[in-house]
Image (cartoon, rainbow, N blue to C red; front, side):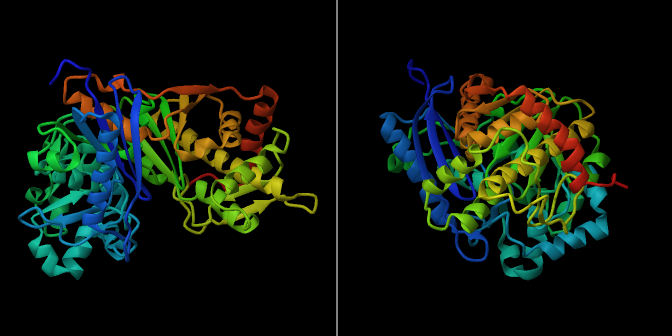
Length: 490
């Protein structure tokens, strides 16, 4: 490596967008590029198109900096993947995490093996998105493809393979398959057998920061990259983004705000698996492979804002919709609207899982208008995020000591202010819009001997109005929880 300070590339293969960036070792971003994630029919991503988009974005960043990155890290959506043949070629398109087709196989796994037992062993509850259910569906419905499957590659693994010619993954991706033991850090053969697979079909699992391989000369020549640069599969995007936002030690919480929302709490010790299962939450290792995390999701968070805009701002397009939504939400006093929005248009996955939960508004009267409803939508999502965090504290056995907000929805300052008002702990907003890509770059640096903790996104503290905070926190207990969770869990 040259005497110049190293450049680190990070790529985030997201459901909607592919984001690439190049940073220095301290986290200063020098170049960025974004591409739409290719999506085909039947919840699949065309493999060749996805790789082309990712490599184009990476090349654009390298061209902008005038210098190839010294190491490359890859993160992205966890459960999407594709079978590979003996020569490493994809057998069709990537099966997206959102594909509902494996639902019957997920249900069968839960009934035959016990959902709680599976969760205790793997940290994951059965669902259509888990790769183990996908593999069972593959063996059942596409026996020809299953017979030709030499290995499974997640989305990030596939890109690393395209760069290096070698296959490998990270433990935080492995633990999302529902066939990996987070304690012993090994594949569970008995579970793989359910899909007629063996550990040899799985990608090798590398330690955090350990490279899968290096950029091949052919790839380097085509994409303005450096031959021999190490490539690291950095891990699950939610965890890698939290790491970049400095959510790394016990008691710290990351709230990833996007179309959906994910809240994770870091723990020094394994959480109570029975409590996590009862609340619909997963658990596993953090990006460093040592700490543990509890993870919970809310299917409709930013999606509620989209719903509001679709219903009440049909004349607005693009960024103008969000600007008008923000104007409406800001036009009211900072105290609670008095409306309770139960933000569950597609059911509630956690806490207190309830597939029959709905999007409800309580307290709406003739005196309320669009501004009240816009603000109440944000309030409902903020109250639910607090409920997830409080529940995770119980599961982990320790109170939260801070929360960091990250993701695209943090651009709505009214929302981040409400989060800080509703929650009793210090609240920060990560200023890096592509925290997962930056985290991937940091873990790429580990392959060069750099400290991955040195690549840290800037963040700003959000300090709420104290009178408003007291009112929102009282409303949380007296009105919100009473409406959405009126009885304690059995």
